[in-house]
Amino acid sequence: ILCIMFASDIVAHGALGAGQGWAHPEVRLLCEASARPGYDSSRAHEFKEAPGVFDLKIEVLCDLLKRSRSTQAYTGAGISTASGLGDYATQSPDSVTAQGRPQLRTHFEAQPTAAHHALVALHESGLLHGWIQQNHDGLPQKAGYPQGSLNEIHGSWFDPSNPVVSMSGQLRSDLFEDMQRRIQAADLVLALGTSLAGMNADQCVTSVAERARSHGALGAVIVSLQQTQQDGIAALRIFAPIDEMMEAVCGRLGLVPRRSPAPGLNPVEEVFQVAYGEDGARLSEGRTRALDLREDAQVRVVAGPYAGCEGEVVGQQKEGHVKLRIMVPVKKLRAPHVVVLGGWWVQDALAGTAAAIPVVSIL
Image (cartoon, rainbow, N blue to C red; front, side, top):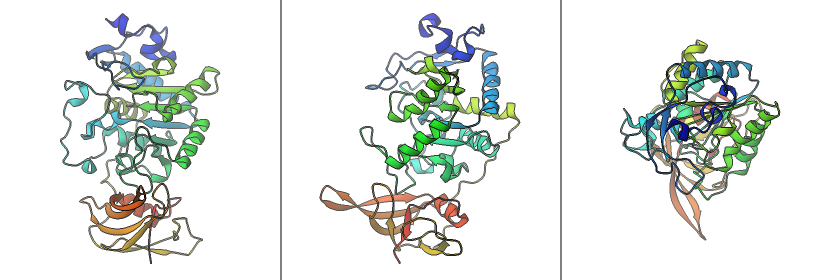
């Protein structure tokens, strides 16, 4: 069965593991269903590395991270399943990822996983230079990753200017251009928990892998439990739970991820003075403008598909994220729509670290 599952060392280990004599990954779950029905995906079988091979691959990965001049993370739903959030590719209730998964009342209460905290530690140590996030969950920011270094290419639950993009929808042009700039500059990409089933953003992997063939990049590292259609182009392929793999990377690099409380706002009504103008752009030094997030305060979205839409603050979530009710276009009419502004946006605005903010007060 292993010979059928892995036609060559390349798809089992990546180019850097070919010919090393490493045992192929072991089957942990057989599931003949397609991982992503309707997309270019493999079967939903799950695998883990053979004893001893996992440690060898972690050693190779850490060496790549140290050698890289520009590393980007490209993350899919598999990085967040340990938080209690579901994914698309898991097709069996007996999945390795089902073990110990917390039950959530709402997706907004999900907390960062060990992998999110580990990626923040890599960023703070200078080993991770950017993060392209397919998920909408805000878990990178809750773990302490700066919003300004994150590209939420498929939309966000915590950014009123960046609504979730449907499978058939169009990516935001400015985020797409930013993604392309990042990938053109990257020599290493970490594809974590993504099925790589043919999404436009999957060029994050294919582009860097293509340059690696001509020695213009270190290549792509693909990490997941399931096989993908892109395994044959990886420089390194690791079959493991994302948390387990990232904890091992931090351990080998001597990094201790911090687990700070998720950034939010104090549960009080407050007006903030921020250095951002009525268009959301940064003001000249010394100038500020009020950002009123008290209940019933009037606000306007200033970027993205909802740019120009106005509404009011309707309250705060338990974690201190701000709920807004804005009027959005629906055909030829406008209808109320509740969106959420992550508390980290306000913290970044107060610190002046955000390039722009998505919401301003109507004063």
